[in-house]
Image (cartoon, rainbow, N blue to C red; front, side, top):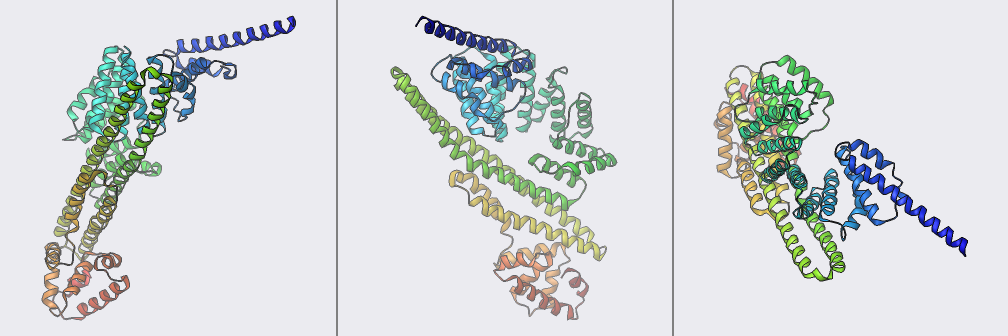
Length: 553
């Protein structure tokens, strides 16, 4: 019996020694975390996690390991890494512990693109931070929330939280964090179209800071996109940033090319553009806008319209996706918070009433917050779509004006005008019609925003229709820029029916048979047959306008 007792005592001592050894390693890593995060991660990777026995040490290791990954800029999407810390600090530990674990949980969720869950985690971290004097943590949480709003295109809230981050970092007093906040705040002002303020803040970023080159790139974008673009200044900022070692993104390279074109350096711009076309496989909102601007500057209206259409489609899909995800994730967050409340109520029976009231208020606030934020997001998207519609109308007028000036020269220019005119009508009416139907099929969650958008689209679609006044307006628009062709046909062929003239107007502007069939509720084959017969009648007639009819039919 004495031998067995001695063996048990030795085993106990060995286990205790192992736990103390692992704890010392974790503490050593934490001491190095701020100044030497790479060394801290190396030390933590050497920890034998199978020898960690207590829940407290598992929680400390889990949190320390995730912090080390973040500080070494290693993005992970595995939220289970924090499970031991979440379980332990839910009922134990300090507000500082709970603040950190929810903040880094939000970082992981944000890496995965789950911004709604990240938002909920950051808000939980913020509530815990209010119980501390940690101004650095408050600044980091505010900045993280601002980034969530930035990724969801909610510019006003983005600006508010980056202002908060700047104030907290200023209170903390570290120049590196202050420069980071200045850079983020300048971007937020830019996204809110306050370009002068944005440039002022970009210029305040310390030239020796690691954010200096990013600030220069931001100033370049700001200079090109603000009122009265200054391409020479933008190129100066781009070149300085590259001299400091900055690597331009595809979006920034397109801005660089645009600036070169504006300054007249077409040869260099063309060379860079050829290289970009080889490596650019994917389109995003920002790069599409700059491609459109480049094509428009080069008077390549066909390309400009193509990029504008893609921009509109992608812009619309982002709004649709956000609307589909938001309600599901709000319900999911409510369930998770209620589950956490249930666990807390069991462990803290004396404070159950206070916790119930707090979480009920939190759920109401979350639901209201997401409703208004998503509503704001949709309104901003709708405004952007309205701007695109206006841009398409402006492009239509521009192409038609160019066509009016060129049509009197040669038959080839007249045919080119007709192709541009047809492309504009098909892009404007067919595509916007599809967008209109798609938008009205969304959830009724934001009726006013969609109604405003629908009204804008109906105004454009109203130009084509079967009512006499609509047809009269449509023919007048064709006559204005195509040598009064519809008036001449009505004079030369008074025996044709109104339906025949309606078909002829669609043939003149170049609508495809499938488009005409859709507008007039006919079969595509019937449209082609009618066109062939009408064309034969017109071209066989003895008319002084024979050459015009032959060119445009």
